[in-house]
Amino acid sequence: MAHRRCLHVLSRHAAALLSLKTPPTLPFSTSISLKGLTPFQHRSLISSTLGPTNWSHYRHFSSNKNDDEGEDVDEGEDEDEETADESYEGEEIGDTVPDLGREYTLEEKEAEAAEIGYKVLGPLRKSDRVFKKYEPAFAVVQIGSHQFKVSNGDSIFTERLKFCEVNDKLILNKVLLLGSQHQTIIGRPMVPDAAVHAVVEEHVS
Image 1 (cartoon, rainbow, N blue to C red):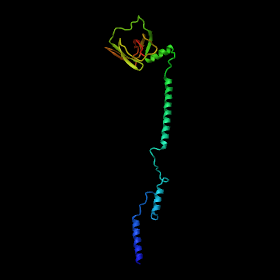
Image 2 (cartoon, one colour):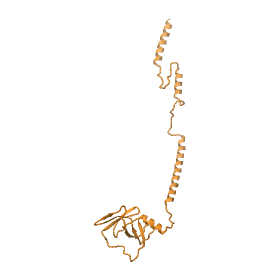
Image 3 (cartoon, helix red, strand yellow):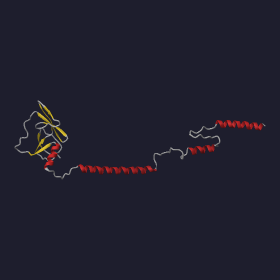
Image 4 (cartoon, one colour):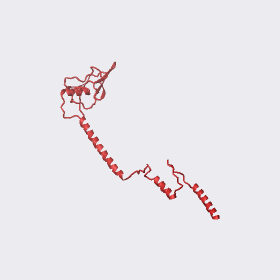
């Protein structure tokens, strides 16, 4: 009888201890009862549940053996892109650079010079009185993409002009503004019937 009481007390203490040591349920949507499982079975359940077969997140390493191959592929692609860009730029340059050996007709020369902003009259003669007495007047002329303020006797440096030689007379026909002590005439954008005469002094290479 005493032996049965001891077993009964031990079983009650064991039940109380098991109820205190029961682990909490896992945070999954499916409820899992751990009462009938041994510790070994418990460990196997956790490992199989959290294993790579059911877990959607994998570990990614910052470097592996494939990185070197990927870098080689990227370098090869960069080299291909650079060569393609160089060939494309070469095509563009080849298309835009004018043919230096091309011969222009008289009409083409006049049209291109007029587009830049001047007209070639021909070589300067000894009888021509180009440089007149200074007058208190000025003009703003456009040659190519540049603008210059000029007066009698001034010298300006421009980009090398086409179809003209040293001592050639020019008419600068893109006059944007005329001014004097008494009045100023502003063109919209050019002043009509206005021109500035000039002479080519030298070509600098």
